[in-house]
Amino acid sequence: MITSKPFTDSDTNGRMRRKLLNKTLWLYLSYAIVIVTAASIGFYFFLRNLYSEEVLEHLYHEKTTILKDPSINTSNVAEWNKRNSLFKLIPSEKEIPERFYRAFYLDQNEGEMVPFMVLDSPIRINEKHYTLRLRASLLENEDLIESILLVFTLLLIALLGGIIFITQLVSRKLWKPFFQTLEQLETYEINRKMEVRLPNTSTEEFQRLNATVEELIRKNSLIYNDQRQFIENAAHELQTPIAILSSQLNLLSQSEELTEQQALLIENMEVSNRRFQHLNKNLLLLSKLESDSSEKEPVNLTELLEKYLELLQDAFGFSDITIRPQIQQNVVVLANSFALSSLIENLISNALKHNYEGGIIEIELTEKQLIIRNTGAPHPLNTEQLFRRFQPSSATGSGLGLSIVKKISDQHLWTIEYVFQDKKHVFSLLFSSAN
Image (cartoon, rainbow, N blue to C red; front, side):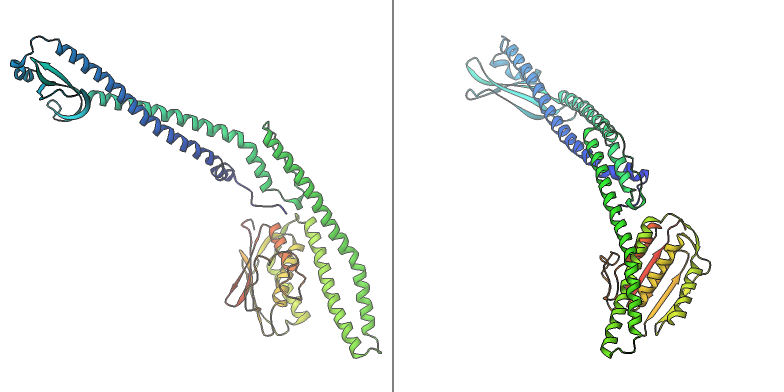
């Protein structure tokens, strides 16, 4: 059966989108971070080199102007240096190669070390070698570069953020048919003959998805209906031969000419036939549950449970197993009375069947839950196989009892749980809040 807890709006719009759409969003964000970082760094160095070239061009222009000044000679170099803070003539023993570089100098106006572009160029004054050192402050340029870079980065972030936001909105709109289809599948139950209405979409991939889902549901519905019909027909057809076999065995057991060995064989056949009857009864019950599970009414579970225990007492006297009921009065649940009776019968029968001589069964009923604890095997049961069909927990079981319990619980939106606690097998039936 295809069934699951339906999504709420927040689930569909939130949780699923965090799993799918935000994966795409994170890729966009990662890409945006890399692009913004790389672009900002590249743009910074581009502007820095651009302004460096302009400053260097300015220094060359100043150099040309100074070289054309006829008033400069060896006698007034010291005085010339005093008058110019950004230009210096430095005596040199030999001609040095021209070079330019960045350096930090104390700015008297700013009172701090600031970056300068420096050009050292060789010149000759009165046949003596000098180095003409020209400087230009880069402080204003650096401030301008940082301001431009900040504006550029903010614009780039705003642009990429807008693209991501628009992409997210478009993605949600584009993926809407997918989430609607998913929601339909989450609430679909094949045994209730629910109609699946998949959304219309112009997206080719979603059209293919919807067509595949519809075809899959159609095929599975046919297989399910054929299987259910077969089980129902087979169970009904087996009733007559089982009844005939029971009658014939009963007649044979009353024969006075039976030997002890023949009587033992007939007894074994009767035991097997009773198991066959029980299996056939459970198959009929499953078939009925599959086809009729929607009619629910308020049922007094307290009275139903007490009547069943009373019938057990009259029929079997509980043999040597002690039953300890703790039943709250007037517990009413919204349920199908036939299904609820079957659930109680299977749970208590399971506790009796898998107990031992001198064992204990504790039955606790409250408004919120029904708990049945029983002694039995000294080890926990396999919870993965426990509620599956034809997975008997002992050699005497048909393997359908607990699967019927699980089926009825699911149909009523109840929860059946099993734990092994204090050397007891504990089955807890938790009623839904609607009850």
